[in-house]
Image 1 (cartoon, rainbow, N blue to C red):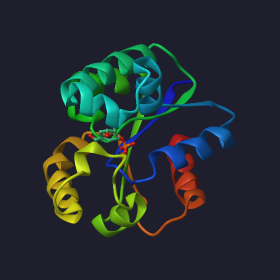
Image 2 (spheres, rainbow, N blue to C red):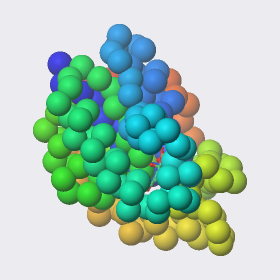
Image 3 (cartoon, rainbow, N blue to C red):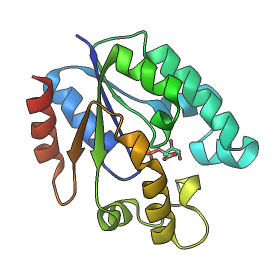
Length: 166
Ligand code: S3P
C-alpha cells in the first residue's frame, strides 16, 4: 500500500488527524518535523534559531527523500514542505497527497501563541498567518486532494479522508 501524506498550513490538524488515521488503518505514523528533530537532536525552533531556515529546509528535504522510499505509512509533513517542488514530487511518487485547510481564525485558535512555530514569531500573528496563507495557496493547490478542517473534529476529518483513500 502506498503512503497517505497529510500536508497543509500550520494548525490545520495534520499531526492529530494523521495519528488517528494511522491508528484506524493499522498503519505506522510519522511526522517529518519529529524526524528532523531526531536527526538534528534539536527542536524545530532551535534549528531555526541556531542555523536558520535554510538548514531546516535542507534537513526537511533529506527526511522527505528518505521517507519517500517507504510505503504503508501515514506521513504528516511540516506546513512548508510542499513549497519545494522536489519534496512535492517525492511525496506524490510515494503516495496520495492530501492538503488539510482551515480558516485563519481556526488556525489562530489551534496554534495559540505560536511560540513553537518560528515562522509565526514576531509581529501580529493574525497578519502573519493571512500573509503566509496567501503566498502558499498556489502550492497547497498542487496536492492531490484537499480536505477542509474548519470547525470539524478529528474524527470527522478522518472519515472524510477515509472516503478519499478507500
Ligand atoms: C513550518 C511548519 C512547521 C515546521 C516549521 C515550518 C512551515 O510544521 O515544519 O516550523 O513552514 O509552515 P507544522 O505545520 O507541523 O506546524
